[in-house]
Image 1 (cartoon, rainbow, N blue to C red):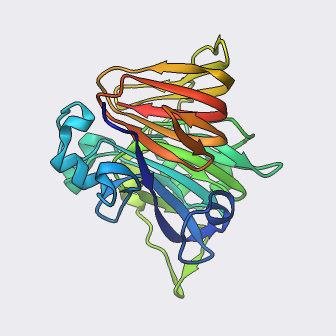
Image 2 (cartoon, rainbow, N blue to C red; image 1 turned 45 degrees about the vertical axis):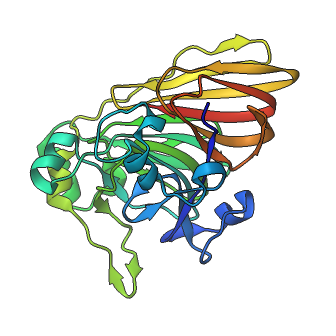
Length: 312
């Protein structure tokens, strides 16, 4: 049976980032504006790297290309998911992502559907998901006139909230928020509004025409969470199950007799968001992220942990 593949993240400096990824999780960062840790990443801009065992030092891309059996021999040029921890010290831009068809025709790329689990946030934190325009003409007029307060749908958030963000959804993570993001393996973003900020003395590029092309109008709220299941030593909840991925939350508290998570031939990506314990005899703690390969058929977990599991 294969061993668990613990991943070292790629950390990215951005205008809106902070220091929480270093201070909270101990990640190696280059500065004080680290906005993203790409914890499971097969992107040319930044790869996560195996930290342990037979494949230590290998990038996720190298594993995907050279050892597809670890992932159940599924097809595709790239690993299908990108998983991030995001530290929004300041507001992210208001943005939208295209679907696969628009991205293929216009960018020779894939689209981006994603989801967010709120790991932590400040009191009175909020987030942008959706808009108030009823028609595309109204949408365009509000954008042209810069009436962002009238257009954007701002929601209060709390630790533990979950949001599904299909392609075409206007969205923005806002300041004082730490998010776990599971998404399609795409870095294609159309920026709609950036608060007039300057980077290196210049405004960041906006993509208004393409944004208007792809924004879903009118906006429809998405509610995806399933019922909470309670068992001996755990609770679990499927947060979203869609054709692109399934994401599940587990809260585990057990000592001698482990909680057993069964899995099939698919890989399973696991993010430890709180606590510590063991998984299949390996010590794990907050900030760890690993992939259980195809031939690992179960995870035996002890300790007190909150984890998120993801697969296609």
